[in-house]
Amino acid sequence: MGHGLKETLIYSLADALGMNLDVGEMINGSASRIVKVGPLAMMMKCEVVSSQLSAEHGYFVILRMRGNLALFMSAKSSRDFDQMTLHLLNVAKMDSPTNWLEERPVLTVDEASAQLKPAIVKSFVKVAKNRWAESTVS
Amino acid sequence: MLTKDELASLAVGDMIEAGEMLAGITKEPIVLRVTTTGEAVVFVATYFGVSLGKVTASGRGEAIQWVMA
Image (tube, rainbow over all chains, first blue to last red; front, side, top):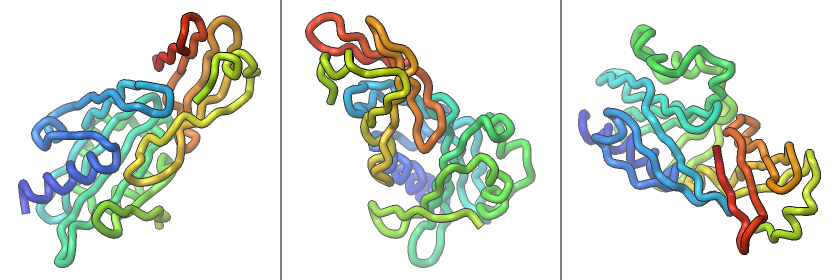
């Protein structure tokens, strides 16, 4: 795995956000884009505030967006295709997202999802190229 | 989206939809709820109920000026 999965994670994130993101830029720090949302041309900050890059469990990132919104995104290689999950988080209902993953033992995506559950407002899984489906957190 | 007349007619508590934030994943729109009216209309923006911050729309000049704090 390695760089390929990292690219998959970032490009899936870019697709989800409708942004152009560079792999190096995102894993190492932050990106900002002006995104047109209806009448608003708003600066969409998109900063990686925590990450876990585990060969065994996959790649996770937590991104701080605007206000109380953060995203948890995971990518894990499987035989058929890379498994992607995305949780929308309300940071008012969790510990600080900054270094959230670094301050915990290495987690599986299920363990991370369980710990984040109180803050999760919506979850999605990637079911095909360019297609996501809403999911529930177990 | 809004005309200047429509902006001026908004009342506190009114809600409008401002477009999609994660267009590649879901059609859920950002929702703007009016908190203050007057020369400038102030909204609180939320996404799936999560606060994104304040948005101000000013009707002065030819076009509506939208600013997200």
